[in-house]
Length: 273
Image (cartoon, rainbow, N blue to C red; front, side, top):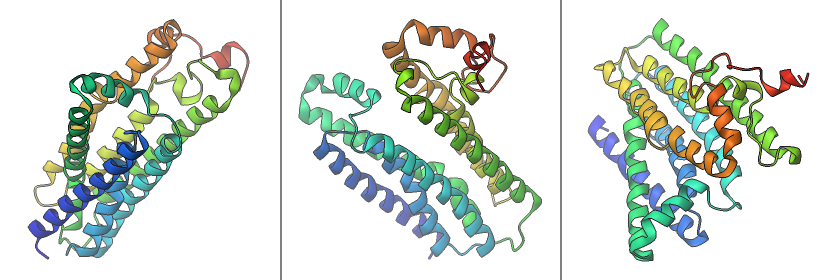
């Protein structure tokens, strides 16, 4: 199959997947399902590209494994948080804003939102596509470095997610701000390590033909995290629900890159490990 044909098949795949997820989300009244579809689509694209691309098999299956494992882990994590739970605050707010013109208009706009996420899937999978179609016969040190960075970042993101889950599961922490573990060093360590994962993908694909285009993925991710749907939306919701406690956290803790807190974390103040 030609590279153009493979890319077109990838576009069709994510559109169909997102359309199905949209129908499910509408029926259950929870549009948070878009997050599961978005994250899971990368595993589908990895399987598609690695199976049908004509690049060096070792390279395309290694980058496919990197995308696939991250995608499945994130989809599983989001699925546990979304399925069977109320719609997340971000989408409740969108429902309020976009529903002013009526329910039908809201659903149409939300479907367009789902299709935008599908387009982002294809764009952000560009390093995967480039590496999977790269005909060079031997894996380079740069690609192994990208794989190593990916492993470190995935471990960091997993630790951050588990620390937050454990904090929320403790009834004594109801309504409190998680400022323990990695969350004492960054208000969003999960976003930071996720961005590093995209840097790793770009690094892996850098030696591919026109490899500099791979940097579009971490650049877009950084923009969305810092300016659009990541930190701004998450912190707006936190301020609505936790108020002054979260404002204190903002004053003492780095927003993105892990760094020394301006005051001692609670676990140190109280002698906890």
